[in-house]
Length: 611
Image (cartoon, rainbow, N blue to C red; front, side, top):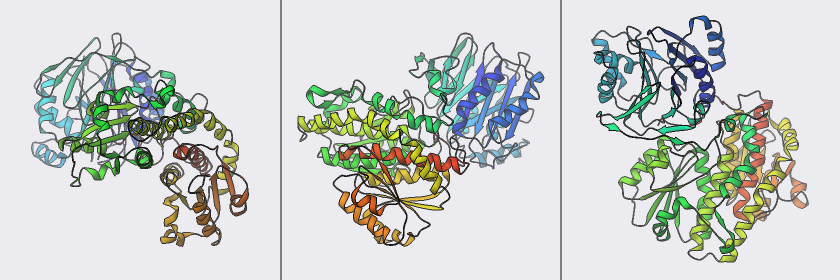
């Protein structure tokens, strides 16, 4: 889940590397480092524990020594070895000629390290990455590409790699297996990165490397090979994102910016996909498999984290609108279960980045067993986008904040659109389809009305941010919303929170109710309203503090709740999109008052590319 970047060209390498690392810091921020090489093979290496701002201070004090047009940078999310200067990347060989940055995990590094140690190699870190530099040193005979290829034959695990050698100062070698790696093609300059966001300042022309590919980058040329050294021809693609999409645009944090972007991202998810006159949806990415989807009897949704919660909501949607049996599985568990893939089974993978390691592994397992696989991702050209037979893009723009907000609502919306599309081929009438579409079209303005209550939600967070634990509860469509609200609070404010189906509270969790454990009750005026009121009364009877998210600020809820946050009325299936907005804002403001690193929560990284 680390971020890597490499530059070769005619400009100052270190300034580009640092700016790129800032764009990648959401991928990990335990430690970081850069190495820069000049045309004569002279290198300068700087590493530090902590965030990139600390590295920038170190570089500023040594700027006279840092000259070069080729270099590598890295920001780390620790796996093997604690965060420290020694464990920070880039790593190097015994003679400090070979420098390596790495995203991924080398599974057989202990075996390789023992073997290399017997041969006299000296190690300076606790990482798995360092063995790659020493392997290349062991095989190097004047040809860096050959040494890299021989080394990778011995390596088990995943990697996105950047490699330079002092004796070959005109090239960078990069390699990919299971970790994202993208090439940016500029004018007399090339860049490699874990994420498009770090490339956009240089170019919008990119190449998405595939697994088991190696590339040799020179400032005016690139060549891509398979691990068996067969030449691979790939042309650059144009990126739809703009550089300004990765800026904060005046917001103090990316998370808040992305919460406020949701009227736009909802609109983007619908744009060009609604056939109002027919009361249905058009999804071009699914047209090639639509006949198979019409025959689908079983849908298995695989995903992780926030995407898993979106999948849980989708289960209710598909059950209501189609005759499909739906299962939602944690991708991290799916691959280890003995799941029978019967005929007419479809596996749907949901992932913001399209690079989630567990979800990719689940997809491959599903394909091995003969399932049709489709994807819902935000990143064009990502692994899941290429691995699945068909799919739908969010078109939500980059999400930089580690805690996902706008992608959750975009995912829920698109999942409803898929269910509506399939439902219209079966029992869903045109009028019912039109009612869904009308509700969809109202969402952007409805979200804007909720965002106007931001100050009120901030005041509520100010009252409650010191409480040590929260319970979130909802029913039916809003049970997964409760899970997502609790996850947001945990992620960014470090407050313990749990989400439950409200009907389950009396089966154990109600024992936690006290004046010190507030309850966030998601209670719109839907088919579950009366049941939810009964559950809230149970909390009130035990002196629990209640924050209610509802469509009305009167009657019984006003009498029994300590705080009320209102949302507009919509159809039952869309309440999760509206009710989660206050929960996102509440988590954000609690984190703000608690002085937390909102965009870079401790121990987390945005894109989980290791198992």
